[in-house]
Length: 149
Image 1 (cartoon, helix red, strand yellow):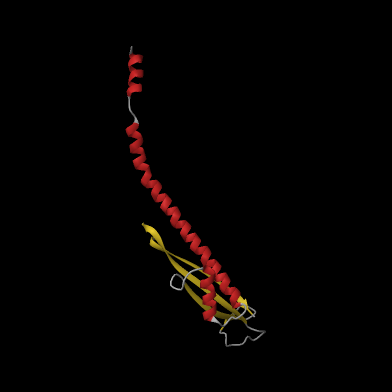
Image 2 (image 1 turned 30 degrees about the vertical axis):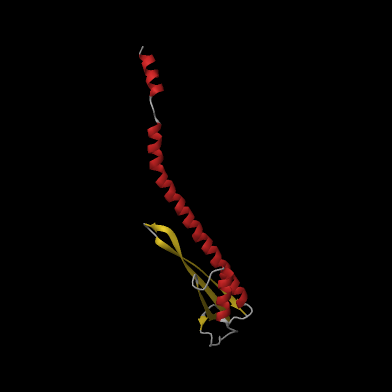
């Protein structure tokens, strides 16, 4: 008789409310994780675009290492960012063949000086919402240098 009551209660018991409560608890966690993945993907995409811009700028610098404005324009065009969306800094530095740094107007005691062009690009990537640790924006930057003839 007891087994008949137990089976009758288990058949008539409704567990639908438990599923709704569990769903309501897990959905905010999943949404926060998904938004974090979207923000991470946007930062990775910005990093890749900046890398392409720096590479394009250094390719242009191989033809004319002293045209800073043209190198900056090449960097922005290569990254497909407008001038207000990313910043570009072009600089030059020199060193002797032994690796010691010198100013670009000096001469090396032994051998010719080596001239390098450095291109740095920065972009502030806004996030979808403010995170406790990183805030509401992430600064993405890429820097590279090239020895020019």
